[in-house]
Length: 321
Length: 210
Image 1 (cartoon, each protein chain N blue to C red):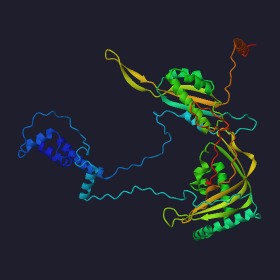
Image 2 (image 1 turned 90 degrees about the vertical axis):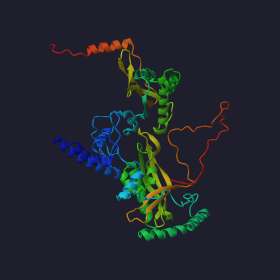
Image 3 (image 1 turned 45 degrees about the horizontal axis):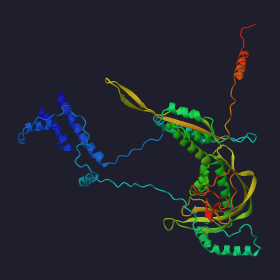
Image 4 (image 1 turned 180 degrees about the vertical axis):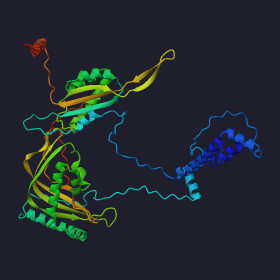
């Protein structure tokens, strides 16, 4: 019986080490006179046997580096675990080398001196664009500056129509990931009513650039299209009250819309990427509700003098959205 | 016989332990949790319906109707105060304009008054920023009430080895602000009540009569 126990306990002892209860040690010393342990003092021990001893209790090498070295020595190979996540970059983060629209673009006719000067400046700018057009045609042979603006306007109209109906799938196909949050943010509980009445001038490609991101061959094409059109816009808030604009009154809108495509990928499409707002653009209509502009910070002894205070105006800078 | 079986079991168990030890040390545990839950709130979280009321898109109004008034719902959860004590303050500000309510709470000595004032100011700011309310003082308190929060239980020791379970009380406070002027209710006089009573008597139907 005792011999069976020792035989049974041998593998356990091998794995878990020799730090078992004093009882078995006593037994061993009794059975194996060669050991000649000193006679044990009376040690209080648990008599209830612990049936399950988790393997981590008797583990010899606790730290991960020790375990690793033991495993290597034993010849166990663990394949290198790649903590990677694939990210697809399908659009650039902004507009590279943005087009600077000449001042008074829609207001001067080509026949006046100012208009001629504008046209010559535009031709000069187009040298860089020609190079970019050639690069785009390498990757996309169907591209040409004559046919593209019509397609661009179609994309523009479709994108805005899907924004009003808030059709996410179609919107992602028509608009890049950079442009999507700018169009959609804050609009979840708002109702947008937008209509494109007519185009006052035929849309025109004014600027083309081909930047590359991350690695050298990874080309993206950015094309700026100038659109002069009549549109109506009305925004309603959560309670269906008019916040901005009106449905009945159309407005003439001159826009410089940037379209982008990831040229290297064969599955990419031309999508709306952003808009350029020139520095000389007329200010937009104010929203219907009145807003409080915070006044100057006054000390307790000061009084607010209306005549000295001017409402700060925003700087006239070109920005792209 | 039984002993030898037990010993045999012991040996196999020991071998199993060895294998388990080796395996668990080397392989990193990775489990894929299923994500098909419909009910995702647990009992401990409580229901958050009041916050959801701010995310409702209303139906379009026909043009003849008056412009719909903006409503803002706000609440604060798990306030360390009693719901019964909070009720007195909530009842006090019902129907007041927001400026009036804030003024009253500012000079009230109760602990809950400071908390309700904070909640009202937060709600006012929210209304102007995200809910298209034009004038921040054009709001009135339409609904205001307190509810029971989740209590913590503690032991209160009495004499003679007796104990009681002490509740550490928490409450929630809910408020609804509406844009515009508060509707005034005409006070019901005794004469009105008498008229209603007589009308009720006249409305009775006598069944099984000739």
